Length: 200
Image 1 (spheres, rainbow, N blue to C red):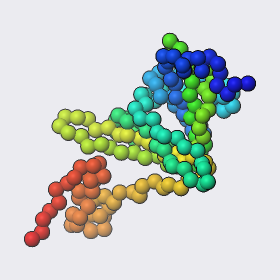
Image 2: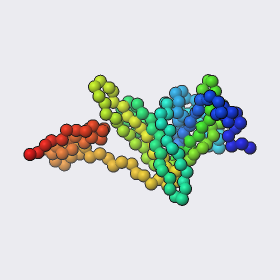
Image 3: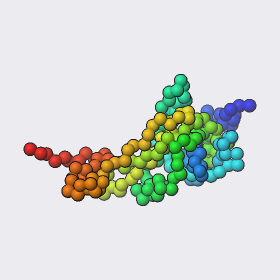
Image 4: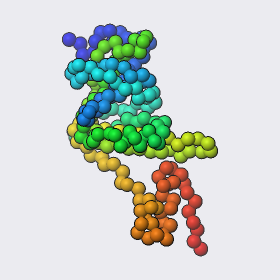
């Protein structure tokens, strides 16, 4: 029996639309595919009854996926950008715990109606480590956005840790009300280079 169905192989040889699917084994499980609309699909041996994969938008950069060899493998980040801050905050608050959850990545080709022509073929398995968020700097009348990411390692050992919480001006003023030492840290965390005071 072929690992990749013959019709998918034939489709890959020509002009095709590729569907990339991501499943995170949280409770409840998260099902995302890198496209626009929600579509019914199933990963072979993982979703036997099928489910609906939520459209996560266009995948701009495909991370390099490595397997665990001699105990060494890099982590990869799957990210969604352009999320408005209110929606991003609600998403983060509603996410179940991801650390240690199994992550499956699969693919198949799509037909002219953007539907999978076969069950999704699992090609890579990793372990979720942590989620991250970043807010790129904005200029002029641009609206602020968030980039949400999921860090995943190959194998079953999570070695990375989430970033420490940012020590803000509010934290510092709770200890010392007149201290302005941390007044610019929020801007620094967003990638803005603040103008630091000069003491002569």
